[in-house]
Amino acid sequence: MRHIFAKTAVAGLLVLGMTSCANDLNISSIDPQTSTSYEDMQLLAKVYGTLGMTGQKGPDGSGDISSNEGESGFYRTTFNLETLPTDECNWAWQTDTDIPQITGISWNANSSRTQWAYQRLGFNVLLCNFYLQNTADKAEDANYKYYRAEVRFLRALYYWYFLDLWHKAPFKDENNSMNDLPVEKVGKDLYDWLDTELTAIESEMAPMGQFNSAADYGRADAGAAYMLHARLALNAKVYTDGATTDYDKAISYCDKLIAGPYALSSTAKTNPTNGLTYSGYAQLFMADNDINTDAMKEIIFPIRQDGVKTPNYSTANYLVSSSRIAGMPYAGTTNCWSCNYARPNLIEKFFPKDDIPMLNDEKGEKVDAYKKAHGIEKDFTEEQVIEADKILGGSTIEILEAADDDRALFYAGAGGGNRKLRTDKLNNFLDGISIVKWQNIRVDGGTCSDPQFPDTDIPLFRLAEAYMTRAEAKWRSGDATGINDVNTLRTRANAAPLTQLTEQDLIDEWCREFYMEGRRRSDLIRFDMFTGKKYNWAWKGGVADGQAVDSHFKFYPIPMDDINNNKNMTQNAGY
Image (spheres, rainbow, N blue to C red):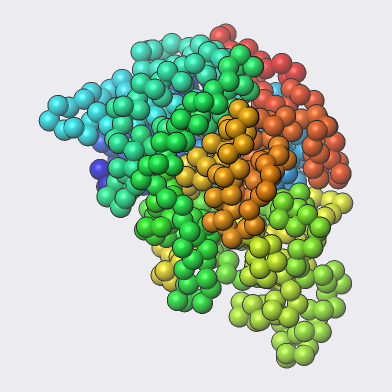
């Protein structure tokens, strides 16, 4: 089965007539050669491949759906909707399509970026249904029972994103024909379906942790289903409009995961090539996290990435390249897009007094003086900027030491230019601190596959989420022992333990542990902090100091194309 993850496309695969779930998403053919033949293992490869790839060739030229292929990937489209409107980061290119509306929480029913995510999820559900309709268990191969349960899990994952982002889904399963229009499944109905479906497949999937090893790493086993079920249960009150709370269920699944075969990545290691020591936390987001046994033990379910075999502009490449500018040290890529930078509120989670170490040289006088003193006539080389940061300030090492928290993976030195903590504008990458959490560097010092496309797998589910989920579920249930789970993660990060656990402590700790992992909006909504005035952050609502936004922005609008082409779908309130 491991060979599935070495394929960049599904040779000879086309499902003619596979239009969208709602017959209106303008899906392009899976294989441009328009052959109707395929093998079930190739189809399974395609089903898994759509987690981290965008088309047949990669990185562009034959996309799965007819939008800008680089913008069309599952992780990039959902990450943008879950992260860009929040207190974690800003997108510098404010002239890009729909970016001011997404970053300022002012989108409408014609939002391009909400439609791209809707299309991608619909396409991926479509592939899952097609697989389930056109393959069958093979008694001679016990894996086939697992395969079908894995595909059902992936379909549940996509429907969870529909529920979380839109509060509804255009719903079809393998029992519907290709010509059936999806029906609208809303709120509690979709929650109940997911609850039932996950319960049904958990016993049919490979045992928890079976694929948490090199042989089949990247496949979903029961541990992935448990984590998704716990996430679903934690958000039950939001998803069912208050009709259901399932904190006990969330705790139960987290108990299984924490007592299971997983372990937090906690052992620091020194890279023999650059001499830097990386914490166990940092190693989770590095290019060899698929062979680093410590990192692998924490990663319950990854999106596999390989710079040669899965080149794309959507997944790890998006996270690494978008957060770097040319001139930054240890960039790990030749492709620095200068896009995503930290909002000040993210930095405040680690430096509440705004005392983050950083180069403060708006006029360039300090850098000029340093260059003159050291005989540097042009731009810094990487070696020179590393040495300059030791004197001028702002290196990641210095920031980590000042934060007393291994998770403060930021850069504010001279590489690429002088940064600001706060700004009165949004269109410059240097208007905020740089985030260096995601890296295309191997902790073992080895060479990455490609200088542009990262090898870094995306830990879509990791054990730390079970600790935070259990902590919050206990807190909401009145159980004071939830603080112990938070402190387990803080201890791993070499941060001081908390002595009390408040609502603010919880939402801040979710951010410190999971920033830039594509979930912040969901957490803020659960704490009633995304809309309204309970919590404002920089540029919330499109103003520098932040402002309340209307409650209808808790959920995204159904794309107008789907409304116009599927009589079963209705628009969300407020749009």
